Image: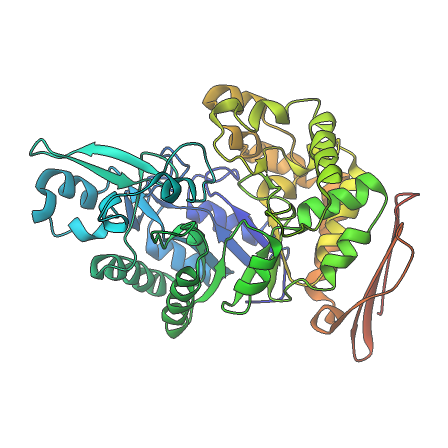
Length: 476
């Protein structure tokens, strides 16, 4: 992966009708800004119940967007990352429909994870209550088969997302088939979506257990044999990120978004500095994503302390809601059919109260901390909460999933804030200092001083949080 900023986007929400339009955008309005492109699910269909994360056919590009030849052409312009959805497939898939029709006689029967696969002798209340849940309720759905019998199937997320038995021969073959298709299609990197939930075992939390680490390691090796790098998406305690980073190419720095908010809201960089002292260097840094702003990544987990104290973390969440004029509350928690209990749904710009100076400082911090920065398409334009889309769909995360028109793209690239960010992004992409050594200079808690040194090349970031002032200096 190039040590340059990446863009993460849906194709059809960035003023594009298809992959060819996206290719044109990269060669014109966004030229030079990104060294990599993470395309959010482009499989058939892109407009499922979970915005493409419930593929009916994981190996078919939605025909409305193009085909694999189009993606191959785009891969010649920029490195492509794609999602490998390891935990589940759509209930509408050919495989699951065949299972409902033929039951045990289906050639796909072993592909799906049933309740009795994990609990052959039944489950106790303690077994069920120990299962880690990102969403309310138990992770099972009863399905009626064609012969009149019923089966309890694992559905970790929604009833349309049927969990795969990744340890079965059919599950192994299914995932390997997707990897083969990606290799032929020009995909250079994959994100393992929902990988933390892939392994279920009786008597455990069924989330990030020892066997999960083994599974991720084995799948990573298979991908690397095909020249594909691996990014793992895990929302969990920060020590889990540190551990998983030892086994894969890249992990997300999901702690950074809230730590930056803490730094700016409280005029204190202590917690951020503590994290930067131990954070994985093989990280993809983010401020915003297609999901919400994660809270669990900095929070306490049982007796394990978090990166931010509970009281301060609660104040940060409340400040986000206040800055967004309460709109984020309409999209978070039990509101708006939202099922992600550990996230606040809000654009990062709105979380900062639409303060352009604070937003620019936040991006500067992201671009200067260790890791490869990834910028979400809404964040690229300092997008505001899309309340119209939220009302239309009643899906909490849609508040930060705006559909940009071509006209909006043209308007946004002419805005002063975008031009200022563009200049900063070009510096991050081209200055040799960022291929050198990271230095966190010791300062008072209201100051942040970061320096990169690469032999005779250097770049420095100075932030005075009391004054909310920023200086960037670098060698010519």
